[in-house]
Image: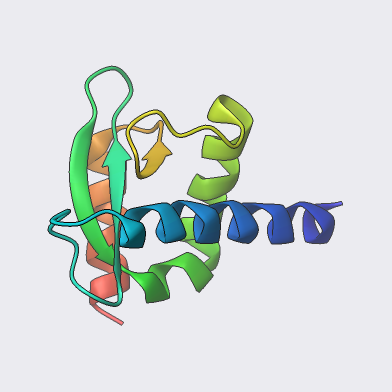
Length: 96
């Protein structure tokens, strides 16, 4: 079951990336994606696309898919988690 859902998460992320790249002046460098993180107040982060293939980051994306479906109201990937948990994860990914 997990393998079947993973393509939909990645496909969803690719759709959001296409929408972002079609917008001018979004401030996202090539090879990166904007994500909005938070439980109530969303904060914008720009992360490398390579994060999308990391299992821990994919877990966050699956949770976002369960929470928001394929609609991301902020215009980027919306990840409903504690900001501290996101920062810890990205710090771990940066150290590898």
